[in-house]
Length: 234
Image (cartoon, rainbow, N blue to C red; front, side, top):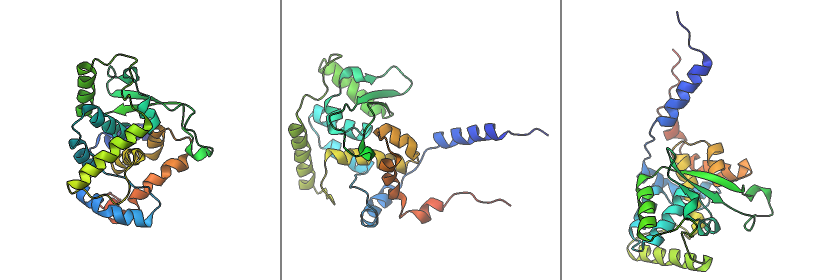
């Protein structure tokens, strides 16, 4: 009788898990957010369908691209403002963007220090098409900054979008900032089952504790999380 090694079993299980699509019950998760915020120290976040609805309100292509980039990369505002066309690589199997944090925004506490450089994969084909179309239409050169705007201007952009959204019936439980997109990026990864060390790398956190906070989004989901997990040993 042939035997299956533990190593090959681990690889098989890993490949199956990584490729398995995760179905998120968005209405349920949105409904649970208030409870999550009350019971944990999580910062305010938006969920993917809410981000999508916000982007539909953006008529200006550069603004839409900026907010989409904030959500899909988890970049800090100063990191987004530094992005150039040369930072995007579309030649690999999965497109990626290289984000450089520099030293300007480093905190005194090690918990919030950022790594110097990090590569963030981009898996959204619509965003990639939008980005490449923008480069072509606006004749963006290799070393051109993608967002020629000040921090004040970027925050005003977002403020105007939120006011427009609220006038159309959107309701936000807390203030929406560029940091909210970063939190939303991390929460989206957690909800899709991605491990915290992987998320830590994408966010550029030097300390695990800085990333671990996002796992609290699952604290109120114990019943639904255990459902469907196989523990049948007989």
